[in-house]
Image (tube, rainbow, N blue to C red; front, side, top):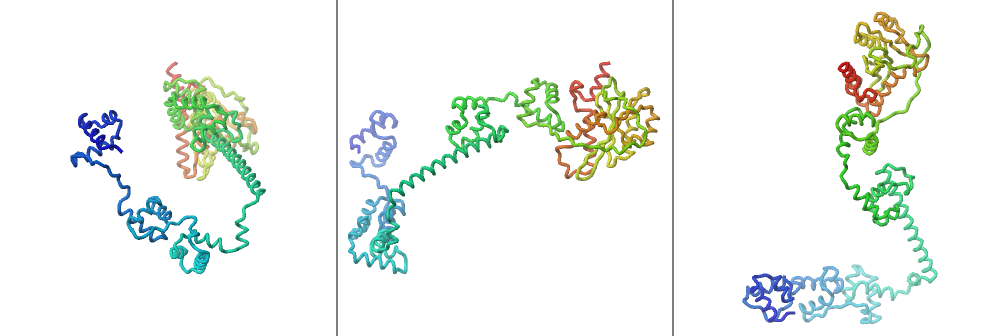
Length: 510
C-alpha cells in the first residue's frame, strides 16, 4: 500500500509533466499506469485523495446473499456450494454466513464429522438411509451431515464379508503382475503406433508421389520425403516423422524452402495441358515438344516428358486383340505389288484402303477410308452403319474424283469380298487404277492402313464414354476428327506439320 504523501506526489508529477503517466511511473518507480489513472480520477472528482484506501470488494452483496441461500438450501455443505456456484472459497463463504445471519453458525462438514455423533446416532442415521422413501440428500440434511459421510457410516456399520473381501488390498504378487501387464500394454501400444506411422507414410507416398505400397523408405528421395512429412506433420510430431524417414532436419528445411520457390515452368505447364486437351489427348512428348517450339517455348524433350508425367498428361492405350475375318477365296486375287513398301515420293502414287468397326452402346459404325502413302492423308472416307458395297464404292468414287488426268495410283487392300465385287472392279478398270492385295490372313501386308485405324481408335474412340451418344452423333464426331487429322494434326515425320499444310508447303517451295 502506498501512503497518502506518495499518492499526492504521483498526482502532482502527473500534472507537472503534462499528463504523461509513463514518465511519472518511470521516475518514481510506482505505481502502475492504470492505478495512477484511478488516483487522478478520484482527485479530479473529489479534489483530494482519501487518507486510507479501502480494498475493493470482489463480490457484490447480491452475490453474497445468493451463495449463502444456496448453502442453506442444499445441505449446508461449504465445499458443495463453492463447486456449484463457482465462488468463493470455503472460509469466505463461512464468513458470509456469519455476516448475513449473525445468530446462525455455518455447518462445516469435515472428514472427522462422525466423531461428533455417537454410535447410536450413526446407527439411526443408517437405518433412516436404508428405509428412506425420498432421496439420500434429504436424510443427510435432516441429520446435518453430507451424503458421502452418510454412506461412509453405512459401509462401516454393515458387516458384509463379501463387501469386506472386495475392499481388501491386492497382494504383492498381483501388483507385480499388474505392473508387468501395464509395461507390456505400453510396449504393444508403442509398437502399434509405429506400425500405423509407417502405414500412413506409405499411403501418403502412394498418393503424392505415386510410389508402390511395398517400397522401402531408403529408396525415396529427400524431396519426396519432404512432401510426405509436410502432408503428415499435422497428425504426427515433426521429430517422429523425420526419425521414421531417416531424414535430417537441415535437409528437410532445405528441400521445403526449395519447394516454395517459383516454378519457372508454370506457364509451360498450362500451355501443355491446353494443347493436350485440345488435340484429343493423343499427343505424346515429341508432338507436344514440336507444338511448344511453334509457340516460342524452347525446352528440351526430357523436360517435356518430365512435365507431362508430373501433370499426368498420359495418352491412353489399349491392348491388342486377335481378329481374323478370312472366309476363303471367292475369286482370283492380284499380286501384292507393294510388298510392305509403304513409302512414296509423290502424292497419289500408292493408296491403301480397308474397313474398321466402332462398337458403341447405340450400335455399330463402320469407317472405310483411302490413305495416301505419301504423307498419310485421308484422301476420301465414308462412314455408315452397314459394311456393304455401297460404303466402299462411294469411298472409291470420291477418291477417283480427286485424281488428275495422268495419275494412276496403286490401290492396295486386303482380300475382303468388298474389293472383289463387280461394282468395285468396274470402277477400278474404268479409272485405270492398279489393284494390289495382301496375302491370305496377313494383316501386316496392309500395316500402314491398320496403323491409321489404331491411331484413330486410340486418340478418338478409346477412353471416352459413349453411353449417351447416338449413331448420328458418333458419325459426326468421327467425321470431324478425320478432318482435324488432315488439316490440324501434326506429324513429326512431316516436320511438325499436318498433311494438308505439308502439301501446301511443298507447292510453295516448288
